[in-house]
Length: 358
Ligand code: NAD
Ligand code: UD1
Picture 1 (cartoon, rainbow, N blue to C red):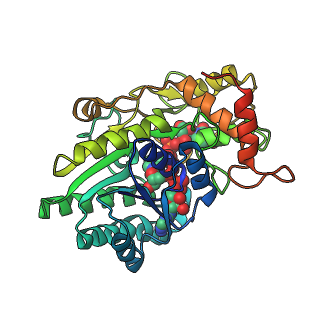
Picture 2 (cartoon, rainbow, N blue to C red; picture 1 turned 120 degrees about the vertical axis):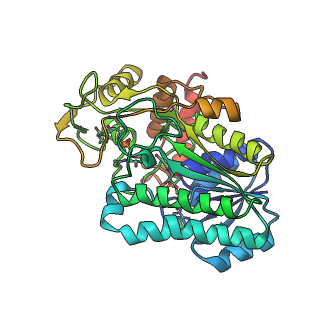
């Protein structure tokens, strides 16, 4: 059985679904700090299988000890954490406590329960500001510029020490580039509780008429059109990488990091224009100064994941944007109830059935 911490969140819920579809048993631990139980109801609806759920905090040792006693967990995917960069600057202790403290607490409880297989959600932010592209796993370009990024780097260091000290551990560190997109059913997707700070969720709200214009943070970067370039990866490809990692970890020991990205970089304007082409909607832009802490460009060399895990990202940018737009149209208020019209899931079902299958 797999424990998925943060399994009700954007990436976690897609991972739970993929695990259930692959025939694994799953228990989710989540405190719903940034998610809703509705995500798990929808996972159940798509997969026709039910993950077990423990509502609790990954920082609470007795919750974890109790969970490991009740469920025969043999591996953990650890998604639980806080991820808003701006908030991490204002509330650093909360971020270190949840992301670093939570991870240490989880590892202590795992060791106590005799569970030593762990997949950790890290981020390309650990690479800092790199000039040379693409970025491979050995690249070191400095340090993250904010407490969120630092918390990921610190957790990676804790995990490396742990694997060095005790060879029973088998740990996969997955450095995500920019996960976007949604489940093609339109039932699962990203449902940020606050106004989104990431590019695609913000763009979707502009296209949906909930926000007036998309701020473009800087058009004077040393990139072909002056806007920031990133490696966007479909959430389904990302979670497929987790299953491949789990298979690898089950037959190895030690610690290994892998980039999960497509190896392709798209600028803000390229992404906006691709979205306009797919949706037929014109997106109003608001040119702004650079956002503090942003890098000009960032894309992956994912050769190691291909060679060692047998994993490659298969879905292109158009598919990411189409699936994200499908999710947004079917769920304009995310997982929360639509005022006066039943649940968003019902609307998603109706609209999904009206769309041609791809
Ligand atoms: P998310 O906020 O949608 O999901 C995180 C989940 O963890 C939520 O369900 C939240 O309620 C839960 N959680 C938070 N604090 C908790 C706690 N103390 N105890 C138990 N549960 C808790 O975020 P996501 O996009 O799904 O990201 C998942 C992981 O991947 C995070 O660790 C994040 O830092 C990492 N990551 C995400 C991205 C991205 O762009 N989404 C990029 C790189 C890394
Ligand atoms: C950000 C975080 C990173 C985190 C990742 C996923 C920063 C500095 N980095 O990455 O640590 O792992 O999210 O959560 O915040 N953009 C706009 N307008 C917007 C939003 C973004 O022009 O409204 C631009 C940005 O300047 C950037 C690109 O779009 O060039 C992507 O931004 P975003 O989606 O926020 O991701 P990152 O900054 O790459």
